[in-house]
Length: 284
Image (tube, rainbow, N blue to C red; front, side, top):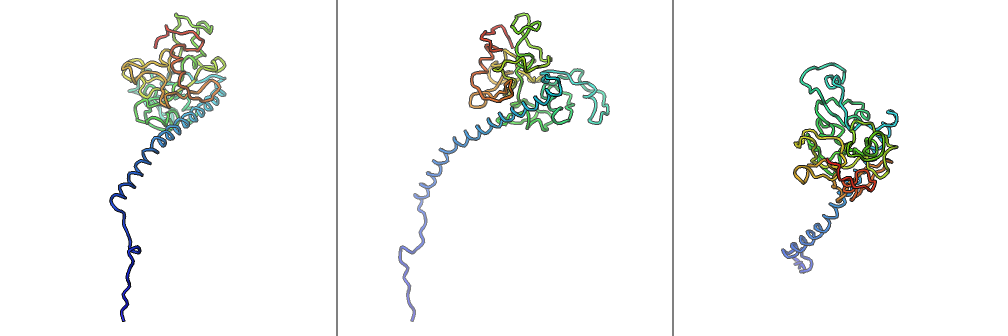
């Protein structure tokens, strides 16, 4: 005898209707749209904190350099020995084709000290321009910007009035004088002459330029009048500090602590040594 088994309607498998699927998709889309800005802010905050940590590491490296240099920081501008440029790591000479004068900055000297690996590229400021990409991309460049080869993509720069003596000086006096309106980037720095509020290093503008206006002589320092100078196109390519972290700049200060600030860049453009005197005659 065959027994017929009836399946109740409630026991049959059911599927989502089109309306239900659309409702679920809409809810997921709404949640994603709410969460994405928070995730983006968290990512930007992580990059800013990473930048501050990197500046602190650079401060530690500068402290180590001071110990072997008699208390001086690396010069903001210097010329490498031509024999070094014309030789490989084994000291073998390779003459010909090299420019007679090559300019390096503090990063090239610090890189050589940290990694015991000479920088011998025959270009001005190779570390600052990210040429021949090596360890300096992870060390001297902010993570909040790209690491494109051959351009100055968000490296760090020294603030020249701080770096070269604490302020612009004349005959050893700590005062401003119109006849001496620029600091000397080749002058050795000493931290004991730097005012505590003045920055040593800060975030540089990603597309900065200096000199010929074509970006071919990317420099390692920011001069006084250039602290808030926008550059020839009025927008991006000025030799100045950047405000890429939440509208502010990360700085390394005289006591080697890192901090974020939204006003200091503009203050330095008006009063380069923060002595409450507006230095309107200082030009970039």
